[in-house]
Image (tube, rainbow, N blue to C red; front, side, top):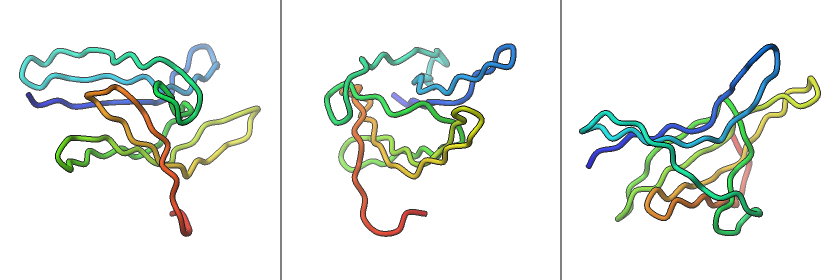
Length: 107
């Protein structure tokens, strides 16, 4: 069926900010949301989850099977803005993230 995915973002409560990598799926035929659980493990291992962020870009790419590609974003650490220029993929069937190494000057 048709689905839409949403991930990451910023939660703020009482002046405290939390940068998220929560992942949700909306089934477009039933309009029912569900949270996708991915166990947190080290970079590159199955279950790896990218750093929480806001302001990132995410697109779906189909090459035989769908993958979500995410790049960039930002977060604030100790009052300093940190801008990311990394690339990650998410496989919705395997429910796994993977960090992608790129070459050349990043946008």
